[in-house]
Each structure stands twice: as C-alpha cells, then as structure tokens.
Image (cartoon, rainbow over all chains, first blue to last red; front, side):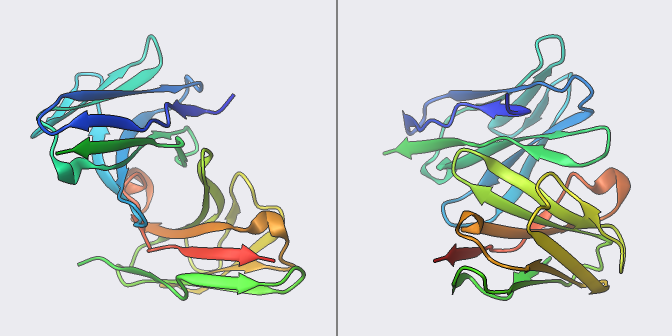
Length: 109
Length: 114
C-alpha cells in the first residue's frame, strides 16, 4: 500500500464549479501535510499547508482529519488556470516528504 | 526570485552508460534533493544532502550515487544506466529543518535509456 494515496482523476469540471480532492495517508506518525501544485510539464510548487483547524487561502481550503487519516483540498469558483495536478504531501518523523501520485484537475470553459 | 536549474531538459543514453545529472541552486539552501517522478507513483526520493559532502539515501537509492562538493551544486550519477531508470528526474532545494517542507524544484530532466 502506498504511503500517500490519491485518486489520479482526471476531474473534469466547468468553470465556476466547486471541486474537492481527498488524499489518504497510512503512516499515523506523519507530522504535517501540504498540497503542491504541478502544471503540465512544469515543476511542482508548494500551494499550501494543511492544518487540523483548516487552512484557507482565497478560493482554496485545505483540511486534515487525523482520526480518519485523510487530507482534503477544496477549490471554489474554479478557474481555467486551476487546471493542474495537485500533489498531496506528508512529512514524516524523519522530516522527509512523501508525495502522493497526484490528482489531475481539468477546468473547462 | 529563487532558482533551481538542471543541466539538461532531455537526455537520451544507452544501457550501460554512465550518466551525470547536474543541479544548481542560487538560494544558498542547505538541503538538496534528487527525486524521480513516474506516472502513478508520484515523486520518490533517491538521495538528499543536508550539507556539503554530506549525503543520505532516500527511498530508492539503488543504481544511483550523488556528489555535493559545493553548497550550490548537487549531482546525481547513474553508474551504469538501465532501461528501468528511464524517468523524469527532479532536483529540489530547501532551507533546513522546519522549512524542509517548502522545496523549490528545478524544471526536471527527462532521461530515456535505450
């Protein structure tokens, strides 16, 4: 079983829609979590951190549920420019990052 | 503006060749990393370095070695390339300890081994 699992998608949504991705992690010792964004043929970039209390950054909301060991990312009012692959990332006890396989989002006009 | 550069965007090598992938960062970061990215598998850590001349194995170090002689430069070496090393290779750097979660990636090298 992969340590960080994501639905690969693609999620095809119209502009303006709200879309949510989930990610599950197997290592309960994972200390903190993040979402990275990777545009097509580009490098990954940090999007936001994930806190148990929730973390909102504009149209993006990230949430952590430690009891169920999953992380979510909600995107409201989707834009064409949100089309990308979203990588769920866990930081382990050794401080290293473990990346999920990514969820691909395609926002259509 | 932070910058991580990699020596090649595309590389084609033959089985058995020795391959060098170079990475340079201009942010004075202590940590540097080499990952490979394969469809469905995500990024997997090959090696990382937290200081000059220091290196630690990641999750999949077999068939690879690294060199860090200067703080800004981290090299990945495939001693004898094999077809299963065909992949996208990404270099990254970060500040140490608590800031390790914010990694800055280079544009990647797509390596094909034939």
